[in-house]
Amino acid sequence: MNLQKKKRSFIDATESGALSDLGFLLIIYFIVIAGFNINQGFLLNLPQKNSTKIVNVEDITKIYLKPHGELIFDGKTINYDDAKVIIKERVRRSPNMTLLLKIYPDALYQDVVNIINLSKELEIDNFSFSMVKEEK
Image 1: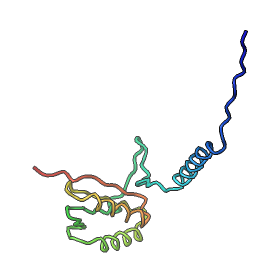
Image 2: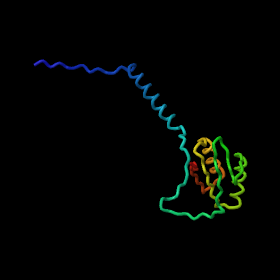
Image 3: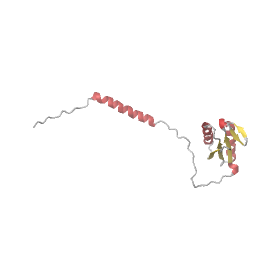
Image 4: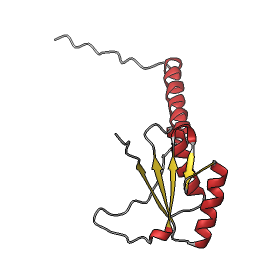
């Protein structure tokens, strides 16, 4: 019976150094990545599906958003700053005011985002939007 002892090979410290460096760099990478803020989009409080809310017609402020960023309020073309002033005044008069944004299909997405940001900036709790149906 020939029993030979197998030699155990040990990993040399210089060979494991590269692996340790790689592990250390991966740990640093994941720590740095975890610290980045992720854009969460718009957080809107939506009503429950079966809930109904009665809104006074006088508390609704309708603004139409046409293509090329045109804003229409009470039949007049206004700019973004005018809209801000009008909405502020309406909120001051009626804290439960609802901002209703009517969006034309060709309106730019960024213009919609700007109005939504304005509603968040002015702390409007009641915000609604819908698409304007094109007449045939």
